[in-house]
Length: 75
Image (cartoon, rainbow, N blue to C red; front, side, top):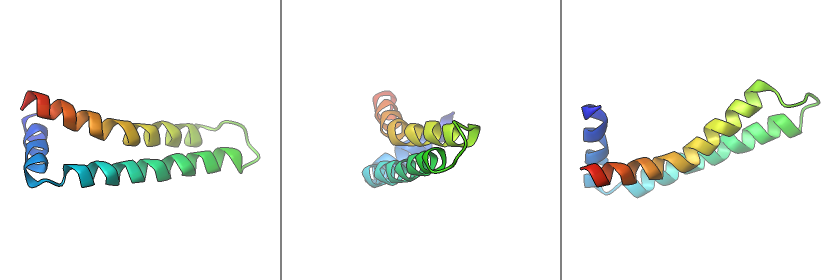
């Protein structure tokens, strides 16, 4: 856990936390679009892989910003 906090502190000190968060949000958006594409453009119903992609993509969109804000509160 200490290593993760040190990595977050190093990222915040370098000034790239905004770019890092937006890069993860862009990847999350691509993952969400891939999940929606698999779900809507295939003839099967709601499969496990599209559902997992949607959940992971939404987590990548929301969580990085929240985690960095929490790390700044505790550091």
